[in-house]
Image: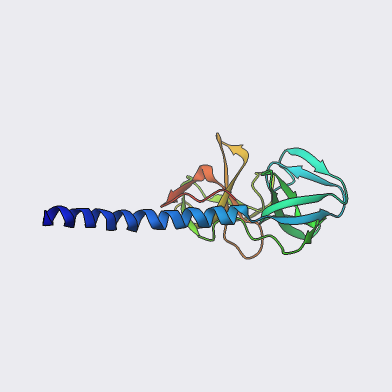
Length: 190
């Protein structure tokens, strides 16, 4: 009887130790995902499938339209502004043509840094946006460790459409995920 009670108490303690933090994590993620921001379009703007002018145009907004924004990332500069806003629809617009209504959007990602390792046979091009047409800003040698914020789907490279945004110094730094091996957990979508 005493052994059975100890086993039951241990099982309850283990379940609580695992389930409660998972519940808190889910609550935090839902709260972050539920936060949205508003912006007003300052002149006609194209909506893109990824945060780069080279991504497919999937729509547009006229001057004066109010848009709902989820978060922002660094990407290729548009008239001196390197921020891109992710809309509530999952599509992207250049922040250059949007005036914030209220608070500025938070950066995309979950606030954690993820690690990847360059797995290409040569150095890997680091670009200003998630497309091979974007400017090459540097390169990472084979085997180098990369610090990743989040990922987006964009131009396919050898059958892989994912691109990783790297932590950086305020500019867009993106690499094709085709040539990166995750070390630990994979980064979340931007």
